[in-house]
Image (cartoon, rainbow, N blue to C red; front, side, top):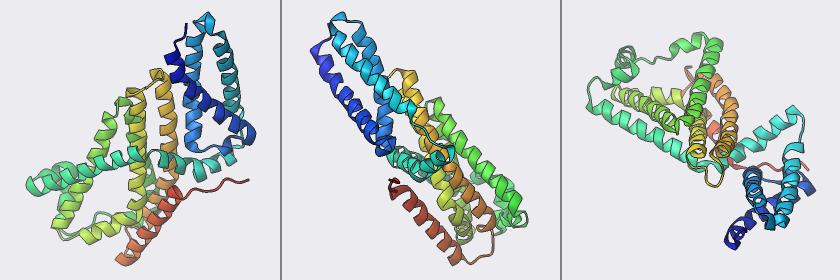
Length: 317
């Protein structure tokens, strides 16, 4: 016999799924927010587990019938929706990715915090430990900074090739940071902290050489896109780790599957951002453009990125 306490716990979840399915049946999946679409997937698996539990008790046949019908409707709602690849891609980039970012701000804040802590540690060790900078960024780069020279001038002569190489490198970092989440998040945390450490070392070494303006006028134009993309990729890795470590009411494999879908949405949306960042890093950042102009470009790009992520777009009627 199914206990009343168990029913009281599970019934709100059934009603929630029924409400979401009914709305999707009336107006389509586009009527649901990104968070609600995520809820449908999670609730579908929870109710499937509940159905298996209910079926073990013959006296609960009416609940089994209700849940079986509900799951049938939910399955049709989830898997019958379709659209052209182009429209799906546009819907994802215009609404899906920004919504995914807004839904994972805690993960992004944590990833950003780990990076910042790494940068602070790198800066502190560079100031207090002789030879530390050379161990992290190499003696040649330390010597270049000591000569008050930027190491970026070679990019200007091979802009198209450099742009491609920069994009490839940035995407590799992003995907590695995301995929390392499968190590219970330890790999993701390490990569975020290490990349932060490198920035801290370089910034401190340049500051000591009186090159802060040269450094940040180079970093700012592409960095306002590149760094947030890396933080979002880090958030994807942390979301993957969350699904692995904290499955909640779901079986661990289902929890990991849901987390993986969330994480893939986050890291996939970083790709066009990193492409734009790579173009700017090759064609704008290393040039002799005035510092004010470079910082203006950085400010404009940051505002555009913030608007893209935080200003919701209306769905087409």
